[in-house]
Amino acid sequence: MVAANIRRLREARNYSQDYVAMKVNISQNAYSKIELGYSKISLDRLFLIADALEVDYTQLIEPSSDNRMLA
Image 1 (cartoon, rainbow, N blue to C red):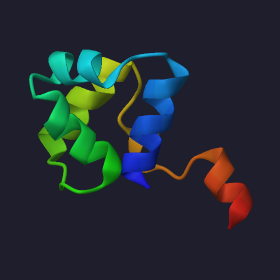
Image 2: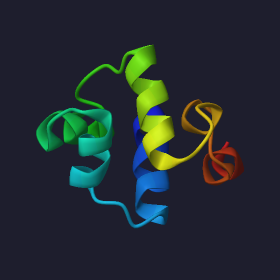
Image 3: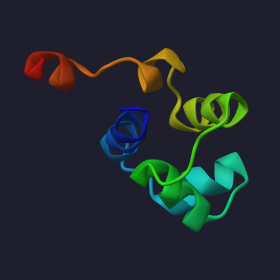
């Protein structure tokens, strides 16, 4: 869910993975693994990604309205 929220919000802002990775100070490959759910995300990194995406961190961890409609 967190990975899907990160990707959805990044795409909504038309940010590239490279751009967000640069803002978070990680490689694009490492960032891609976060979005794909292949790597665990630390709390510190979650806050950095939220800052890069210009959202409150709660938007990354809460079910999106799309997900709530499916439940």
